[in-house]
Length: 274
Ligand SMILES: Cc1ncc(C[n+]2csc(CCOP(=O)(O)OP(=O)(O)O)c2C)c(N)n1
Image: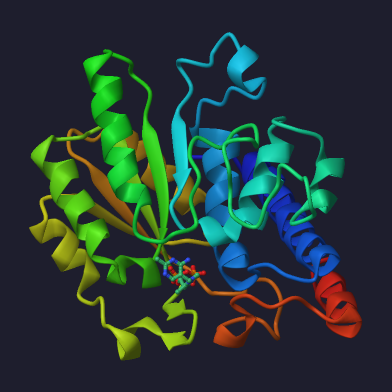
């Protein structure tokens, strides 16, 4: 369990991430806000408290031992870049190059960016890639963990379920899948478009351990990930979140999936996150 001071520090970092997300997307006039804001707390706790990082990247003495992270829902790159800058992969000034020509911080992550293991953005692929990485780490007797963040709408891709089968087949206890369960996808509610529920039962039937949490509760996120690390089976964490979390007019509104703020909306969002 985290101390109260640690929780407060993480809340501050998560708030800074939300401010960065809004600034980056506004500055680029494009990008994915809703799913970035829903995953901001998860990524903050994961990178600041649970993962072994290698911020000097290929030059880092801990490079081989680093935990691997794959952003399967690659469109929420603003949340990812913000947290990568916080833990030292690059300077935070670079964040404002987001989606600019020649920048390492493209709309969807590319390995040119320090901290990015694999290019993502085409939904449905990250879990299968993570399985391959987890198998290879085991073969190398490398104790590193593999974390993968998926969107709930993304789970409608068939390849994801191949990944779940693979994870169980190879008993990948070094693999932790976190599902950002914000209940919305690009054009509405997941349950109306292609229902996922009962999601926990489906994942258990695929022979994964399942932990369900409030994905905005800092301590719950921490405990779930730490427990998953000790697990002897692959673990899926269903993190119940709110799309657009932190900005009142964006919360639970699919219209903010991938749209930039105008100047007035930007000001209002930043005031709410101050
Ligand atoms: C294979 C593929 N099809 C379509 C898209 C376009 N797309 C980008 S985000 C998105 C919705 C994803 O919803 P979800 O996984 O729930 O993400 P979140 O709500 O967390 O942003 C879609 C369809 C894509 N990136 N890849």
